[in-house]
Image (spheres, rainbow, N blue to C red):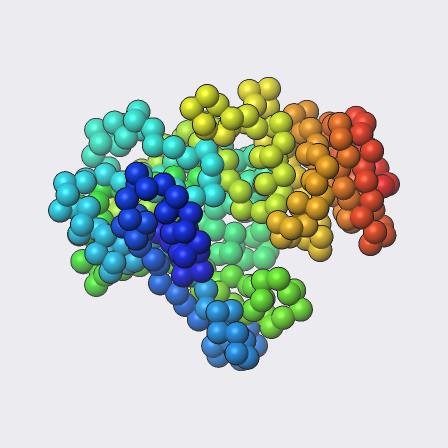
Length: 342
């Protein structure tokens, strides 16, 4: 499933691989929704830049979009019974035959892969039990009241989070969609954004989205399975991208990206200041000379514009601070459990 903003670039890239066939046959495009002005609650106006007025309605749109596109009926007609779904930004997600066998034999309609939360996952959606139905449900941070945020982020209380690796019985998905008039009754999440993602001073807007993992509450008998951390290697922020580009992760012989075994299943916690590194071009500037070693890093916090020099090794809990607006280089050295003024 693609979005209106990424479809053309994706097709252009896939066209290089002629053995895959027509790129148009490899995707379906999800719906789009208007951004809502946070003050007036009217559709946002980008004053001529129409593309900024729309947003994808979250990956929960998978279900009505796969039906409306005809792709679901096409798969069922071809005899496809099971589907594995994951976010494309989860570089740890692969089609695992053992999990497929388990899912098929379990006769579950829907199965979510979950894994143990770490400090890096405090804000990720976690698995919970619905006290009303007794079934499983997904709870996202955007659905959490401010006064409950501390509890939500307690990784000992809420131990398992959603990897967004999902297994679906397509015939039963079709039944549920038909029963509900072409959609699944998923909770709507209100996300606060700015009209122009690159301009933090642009109009404050609300984006109404749904999460595909929330469908776990829509299927009677839906289940979850605890999987190793290697099944989850997401790149949702530049914090994640720095971790994955470092030596904290390794590329296996069959081209899977996973944590180095020395990390013992715990990724480093990276926090880059959003003023300089929210977008990829800021991170690229920081890494233009070299990527720091994070194999022994517990946490890295970077404040201000820095450029990593060659042979920078971050260990333990370390902070790098540059109080100026000039990009300054971090000299090659080992930095461990300290605050470094660059």
